[in-house]
Image (cartoon, rainbow, N blue to C red; front, side, top):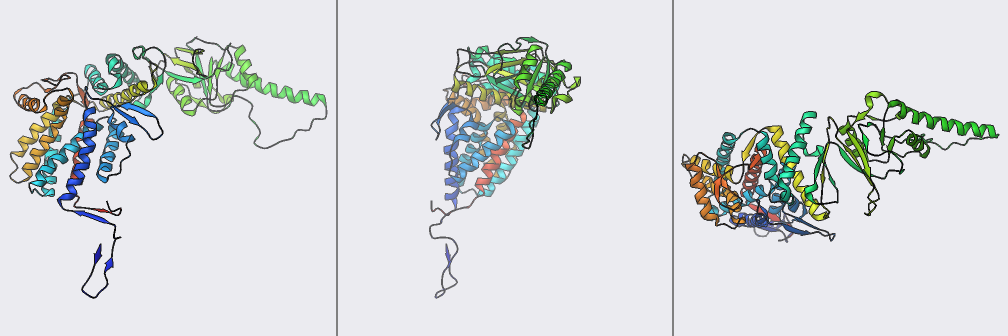
Length: 525
């Protein structure tokens, strides 16, 4: 870019010559095209009949998924508009854990509808104003249609988040597991989240053998074959340190001048180890978990007293064990008190000789008041099991939000169709050109039910017109069923915040793009 105050004066260079500046309606067209490509990429994955994407990563590994958040996270995006879409999707995933694909589709549709009006000469700021009014009307409809949670609806939230994903083949089993897991946790914690449910891949049988454990599972080698197993109602000590005599922090030389002195030194060391073992024995603990190493002699002393001892655990594993069993994590075994001891219903460990697994599977189950629970996912396929776990995590996030907020909305395109009708009604009282933008907003909202129809193999235009009429004439909420037909909506629920956050993010991102009037590229493209 160059500037000159008149002939004869040298030009002033502001930016390099290779800089490319795009202005006017061409800016919006380019941004909208990029956003449309991005939303079209995710469109076939949406809904219970959505298809999967195979992601081939730069490191040579592959993943098969229809999870919008996973796809967005793996894409290497360069276009600035696409980066805005990715940022929007990441915010939705971090906030709600679900609704990323819905957000992408809505944003793309809002921009596509805006492009039609821009070409007809509507000013971008008029579009922005119309979208803002429409958003307010849509949110008022959300508040009107919000209902509370009960057990049946909570199962509906869990099932809705699982549909169209790998876990759907055992949807009844997994939805009941998720609701039971979160209900158990809500009795023992003030706030419940997906992070309080751990996942464990059993690598055995099928996904139908999956189960809920009111405790945790850890993979660690049990150091002696004769250590006790299949313990019932064991008392548990949890230690965040080594189970051995602590080493000197500095190098020390001890000069021994006689055999008696050597014997005394060895005896003192033995006595110290016996004191450590006695502290555990006297505490009444049947099981000890620690983060550090275990001295062999102490291990033998505990084994003689039928005490199971497992060491070299991660800090997170120790914390989970303590949360599940109600034990207090202690720094020194010599400080242990009876109040530090936890308890569970059973502990068993299994050595799977027929596999290449080095560690043993240690299962802590039937805890009375667990603050951590575990879903053991059956099935031996690594890629498919990972996709199932992703689906379970999404469902846990959605269901935990529903429990916490106690506010849910009907899905299956029902709420989006209802919002579209409300926006159309609100547009009738708008005298200016913003009315055109509000009507465009309503059409964009109908993209959600239209995509459900399209992915089910139906004719989207006919079904949307039918749904639009049915939503106005029926008191019963109407939506799109799994076959792509308009029917009364049952058992399809979303947390209110997932729908509301998705709508707000999509609208704000679309309005931000519409407000851009110049793109300045220093790369020249």
